[in-house]
Length: 187
Ligand SMILES: CC(C)(COP(=O)(O)OP(=O)(O)OC[C@H]1O[C@@H](n2cnc3c(N)ncnc32)[C@H](O)[C@@H]1OP(=O)(O)O)[C@@H](O)C(=O)NCCC(=O)NCCS
Image 1 (cartoon, rainbow, N blue to C red):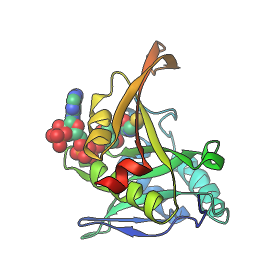
Image 2 (spheres, rainbow, N blue to C red; image 1 turned 120 degrees about the horizontal axis):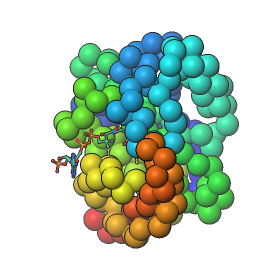
Image 3 (cartoon, helix red, strand yellow; image 1 turned 90 degrees about the horizontal axis):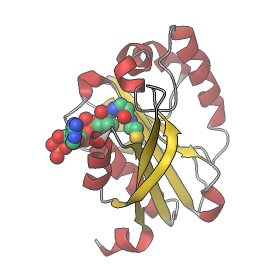
Image 4 (cartoon, protein in one colour; image 1 turned 45 degrees about the horizontal axis):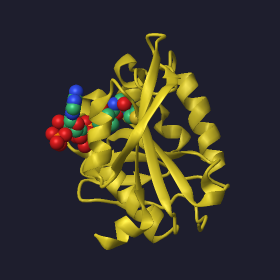
């Protein structure tokens, strides 16, 4: 796999670009402070904008490491940031395997944005970074995310039993999806 860092990606309606500290207020308002958004992810909602600022400031510096693939997603027409998508773990990168995660503000759900962004990231990782496998997991009670993965060309691989404790404190299964290089280039 080639490590070329986070490049700006453009789709029909979206711009995927590097996150800046100055995006914190919009991100806090649109998704980081939301209980609904954080329900199905590993992080907890941010109580204050300072938490978002600290995180984004750290992430801004992390781009110096070219194994970092993390985008803020904005609507091209009005530059409104709506969420993030990233390679969430670097531990599989030595094997050319990328694990993807994403989250979007609830105002922007149901408009196909998550799918549009995931497709662009899959394209970039296979075509420009020479990734071999791209995968993502979602909690069993978050089927919308599985739909996004499927619509982006990923295949359901299986159920990782009891792999996560959800926000209700219950042990929960993860459903895992992936797409491999050969499959991607065949289509
Ligand atoms: C999951 C999430 C990314 C979806 O984003 P989105 O922009 O609404 O996704 P899209 O519009 O591209 O597609 C969503 C699909 O899920 C479907 N869907 C929505 N709720 C659903 C449900 N309860 N069961 C099954 N499918 C559902 C939609 O109908 C749509 O499919 P369609 O286009 O065939 O109608 C978004 O809700 C989110 O950010 N949630 C909070 C964070 C999160 O869960 N991140 C993922 C962690 S694995």
